[in-house]
Amino acid sequence: MAKIAQVSAKYIIHADISIDGVVDRPDVIGAIFGQTEGLLGSDLELRELQRSGRIGRIEVNIETKGGKSYGTIIIPSSLDKAETSIIAASLEIIQRIGPCNAKIKIKNIEDVRVSKRQFVVDRAKELLKNLIEAVMPDSQELADEVAYAVRVMEITEYGKERLPAGPAIDDSDELIVVEGRADVINLLKHGFKNVIAVNGTSIPETLIELSKKKTMTAFVDGDRGGDLIIKELGGVAELDFVTKAPDGKEVEELTKKEIHKALRNRIAFEQAKTEIQVTEKEKEGRSVERRAQTRNYKERRPLPPRLTPPSKPKTPSAREKEAFGAMLEDLIGTRGAYILDQKLNILGKVPLSELQGTIKSLKSGIYAVVFDGVIDKDILMTAERAYVSFLVAMDSKVKSTGRVAMLTSDNL
Image (cartoon, rainbow, N blue to C red; front, side, top):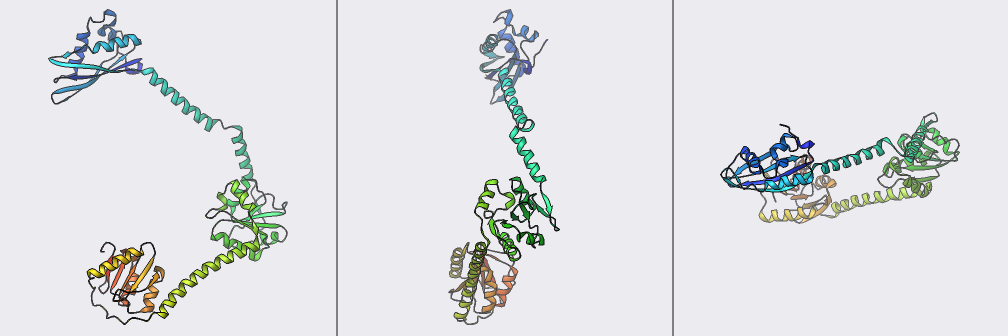
């Protein structure tokens, strides 16, 4: 008997079947052949169509639940649309399978060629896209690739220190000084050939000599390291102009537009030097102010009476726990610390970085310390020497050795 597979069929009939009883797969197939026999004439007899290969193998999937059977029927067909539709409709006349009532409902007739055609279209799109992107770059892409390769090839080594540089150092009246080789390559890629790199932390003698003959512009990264390069370069060479990459960016990662914008906004070296000095003085002033505030607090605040060293960790009262919890919540995100006396009065607030120094300077009179941080071995030892009763923090890396009671956010 000839058979056809689903892959060679033009159409596939999908049907659902429900049976009021328990039957097997052969019962369903037998009912299909038996109850459609002679119904449609000799040309559309299912048995003859299967022998000639125009109807494929009938697939029946059955499962039983609660004494009833449910399943699907799949029939591949190489007949035309009309004949396939007639075969499908004939299945719905089957009302009994074995001794049980049954109902077959055609779900749909699938045109296999449509799905195959869609696959062909989708795959063709994918292949064409790969062909355009990988195999056939356009003329502009080719030109850009060649130009980039030529510009990168133009990088040379200049002077006795063999500094990375562009090919136009001797021919140009103006030079752009950058930090490293990657910066030179990026500027070459965008058409700047009068560029040379410091290539290190010390200023090469070659650059010092060039600065006496040519107009020099320092082009540095947008970070503190860039400021240091400007100061060092301006201290030994005759630097004329200064420009920087945007904050947090490096020259080697700038686009062509960003490079042009930075060079247009260059400023005189003397102005840049003044701005750097002002920035440093502001930072130093803030640091001195913080130290002075701490020192004034220590000088003005009378030392509280010396506390008796605890022999074992104290147990906090309900009032103390409530006060510690409120203070710890108040300190979240501040990286600060409260220093408390025995009446839970705040003696002062200091930055976490200065906490150990403050405890050491006060030496005694501290009842509790509440801070936004983690208790470590150093803070614990400092607190024990100052006879502190409670250390209250967000978390702890150590266990108490016996004299200091430690509380964390979980305890509160």
